Image 1 (cartoon, rainbow, N blue to C red):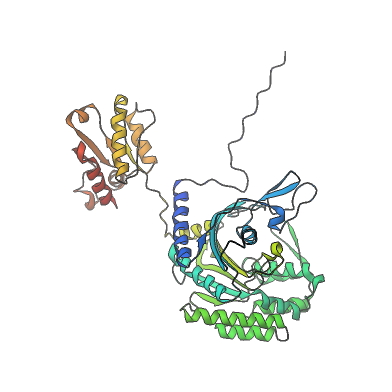
Image 2: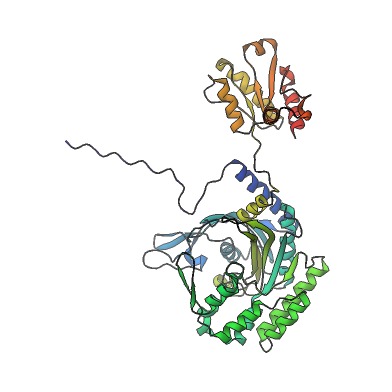
Amino acid sequence: MAKDKKTPRPKAETPKGFRDYFGAQVSQRTEMLRKIAEVYHRYGFDPLETSSVETVEALGKFLPDVDRPNEGVFAWEEDGDWLALRYDLTAPLARVAAQYRNDLPSPYRRYAMGPVWRNEKPGPGRFRQFYQCDADTVGAPSVAADAEICAMLSDTLEAVGIQRGDYVIRVNNRKVLNGVLEVAGLSGDDKEAERGIVLRAIDKLDRLGVDGVRALLGEGRKDESGDFTKGAGLDAAQSDVVIGFMDAGRDTGAETVSRLGELVAGSAVGEAGVQELQTIADLLAAQGYGPDRIVIDPSVVRGLGYYTGPVFEAELTFEVTDEKGRPRNFGSVAGGGRYDDLVKRFTGQEVPATGVSIGVDRLLAALHATQRLDTTDAGPVVVTVMDKARMADYQTMVAELRQAGIRAEVYLGNPKNFGNQLKYADKRNSPIAIIAGGDEFEKGIVQIKDLILGKAMAENATLEEWKDRPSQIEVGRTDLVTEVQKMLAGQS
């Protein structure tokens, strides 16, 4: 008789393009989101939390084919409808603004934070799930709303620990680029595909350089992996016009705006975009946001196709080392712009909107790169167990510590080996261990072990600063909370 085949065990591995977050990583992200929310709230924005799932029709950017939606989203069919995990936080906002337009104030100012999913090819530092933090104003046609977003983004970067001088917010206007494309002969509905490729090509300038962008403007480009990206098919003269636009930056914002005006001369939409850039620059200057924080930069395009006016991008300017040991600038951590046509898809009426999205994971990576973020997460005070029969007494101790606002836990593993309990506390990065056995309970005392001091002495026993500090003290049971508070204060 044939033996039944055993069911194979599942592989304990994270799916490709995804990752797990532990301890300090989660705590640091939570703290960063809190700081960002404080700035957004100070600017008058309200929180909004939308569903992680939207209909593909509502997302709009991707459409289903016979078997599954096109590349870009994680989607599935249900009762004849295609549903998808959201790929950003802006498309859901457009749906909300249309669905609740009679109930929401106008303008509606909201911020949102949460994970988004993109069904794209993963790579180093490129994941299929990541956190975004957005702020948007819906219903404000004035470019004063765009200027406000730029100012708020500057304040936010500094609030989370990016110092002035280590970042710059670059501002451009899609209308200016549309004017350049018109001058280059790329206007009209029949040129929509070419214009999309041009926009995406310019958006990759910092990564591919001028030669790489020129290849994408022409026939196309093959990357290091051998994948080929189709180009826009422009001739040399048309490519020169676009490259000239990307090279229009000058020493001052006024000079850059003047040069852009020359490039779009004769294009009504281009000239309108130049005027909007001038207005934004004037509004920011009036509030004290100078070129040390925010600049006019023609190379900023933003890859998504729904931007209709001003666009902006926050770039970190300090140098880091890549995986091959080469120096490079850290790059972009946030971007956004005006998208006046997105809500129109639902309502049929143009609804002005502008906003920004911060890549939380990249911003955290930036703070790690500048060593301005503590990579360790302080663990709990651990109450060790010397006598299993006294578990209620240990739980009482930990309850008292928690009621005093001290993070604490009782060791709930096998208490037979006391050394393993201390190893556990060390692995948890615990600052203190509480020790009490039969003798301590009879005398009404506890032992408080300073694990931070013990670790420091083990690393350098000759440190003068440690000589007068005992690594373990004996205190009255009733003084437990007070003495733990004193020890924690000394450690900090």
